Image (cartoon, rainbow, N blue to C red; front, side):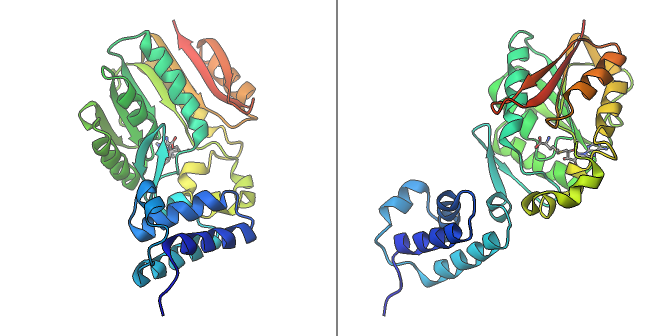
Length: 285
Ligand SMILES: C[S@@+](CC[C@H](N)C(=O)[O-])C[C@H]1O[C@@H](n2cnc3c(N)ncnc32)[C@H](O)[C@@H]1O
């Protein structure tokens, strides 16, 4: 007796995901099927009627069970697309979020008017921000820091995979600690941890149970990393320079005030596609 065809097998998984009320059951089932059957999207279409190999079926089942227990697809696959580029993940990296693409857009716009700029990314994680920027601007040189050595391993792999490793220097340490006292940059960017410590236990399980705490926890009021950045960014910016940080949607005014108090000019909030405050931009003129 032969087993199900490949098309029937992945659609059965999709139906179980639907029944479990997952947000994107069809996409999730397709992505796990591509992995289990070792196919790309086009090949999956062409293979719909072929019998599913038993070992691949078993693999699909084990991936589906992980998804059904709440593990995000990006964690299961160990990779996520960001800004149209592939990024490998590991236990120390945040899954890069679509929201963060706004920060990359704004950085690229600013860099278009500042050729051959030097960029610093603080808390780089998978390297999503500087790798996306470097892949879209061939003259920028970047330094990126993170406290987590394992995250920097993923960032190094992602820089290699996306052919920008010659222009990205990775340094381990807390915020500006790995930056020399006289080192200057034209643009400093960061998507730091910004969630209030006390609210982390109540986050959605796919975030709370799978993203690293170091990537989420912004301290008692969620603003700890912004204070460190506000304190030191001015010393490491070459005028006319800019500082751009991603923020939580309720943090705009507080972060604007932190940056203004440290002497930054033309500090403003940018909203994301959902109309929520998402990035604060400050200038050193
Ligand atoms: C919200 S995640 C952002 C990761 C990545 N930039 C992105 O946008 O996907 C914050 C990052 O800051 C790093 N981090 C936390 N505390 C840090 C510190 N004291 N110094 C440097 N990096 C830190 C975490 O390891 C994590 O990679």
